[in-house]
Length: 128
Image 1 (tube, rainbow, N blue to C red):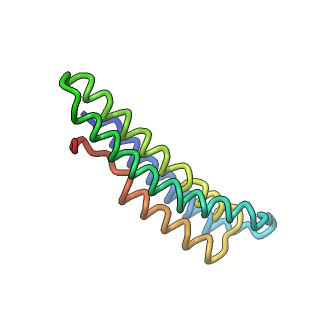
Image 2 (cartoon, rainbow, N blue to C red):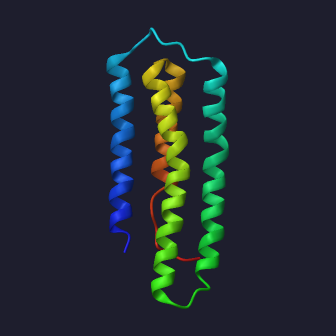
């Protein structure tokens, strides 16, 4: 049921990991990102990930009450895609931030965001 979404999940992991790896190799020091941009990205990571997990749990409780199997499966796919997208946006922004300004702190945040994506964005069809 979730085969296509699981493929997208692993593709996004690979893209993010390759961006972090390319940032480590490329190491462009000429671009300077203002500190407020990094602060906004870090705050997005801290707020959107818990919201996505909470929202997914709430949607799965609502989906568990649906009787029709086809509608239930479609809603599960949509809930998984929304959760994955919400968690992927700050994850990709952190890795792009590291690619443009490779510092140790941005590397740490990029790796942490990738780990958060691995833990919390994995598609599931278990209904609460």
